[in-house]
Image (cartoon, rainbow, N blue to C red; front, side, top):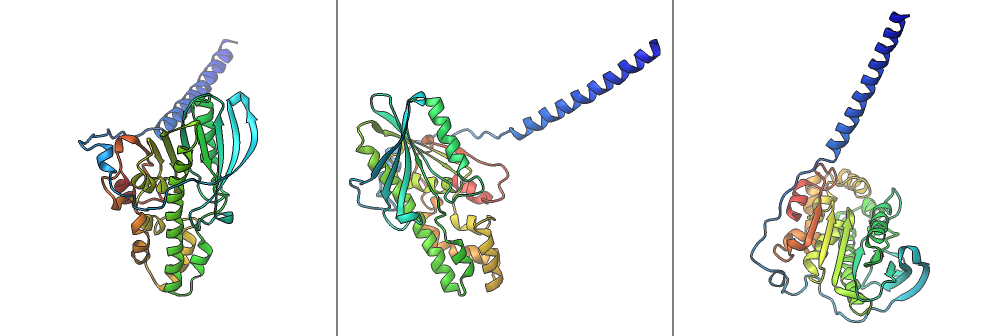
Length: 317
């Protein structure tokens, strides 16, 4: 019986060793996935007031912001009341009725509280609503009613990519791309108008307003940051500068019409990028150095990004 028991123990040890190896392999892989490179902030002498004392790049007339307001639900457990706001956009923004639609999580806590604006990834489908919804949920849970939250909704993509891909002439193509650039500029101004709205609310401490942008909205948030000095803090997750470079590189919605245009006009990707650069120049964050205070900006970047080119990410930094 002894040899049989020894053989069984030897087999059991081998099995356990293999399992331990797999555990270490999985843990090692996970640790590799979460590795990061930290670049410390190097402060400069100039202050925030000095940096953003000039006029806005995208100017507009400030004033009261009319809005429609409906209460969706009371949320006493999370200390919030949820409201649905509808605000008329400053121009054509590609959304239904050219409106800004917002879920306002108003805290039940008394006093003036900070406000965080969470931007959407414009366009439904492919899980695009998950990041802003998850960010909003986390802020509600972690703050315990210590802040108000505006989650901007973006049911429709602001870009008419079908029209871009079907353009028969270069003039039509450039006209369609100019419309996309104009809608982006409108969107940037509309975010400033949300701050105008917040400044007139007794429950909001507008001097402590923050902004969070993820992916597409991170590109927008970068331009908002150099155009709008009133944000106390901005978080940019996987964004970049140079929208013309991004549109000439990124696949998906922007990539499919681009391939049609390259084939139809006999262009290269470099030709495409060069053609649209003047249209997006006025909303390219990298063209306005020194207008934002980096001590109030937190950037999360992807080390390997197949959508946003390296130069666009570096120049945003």
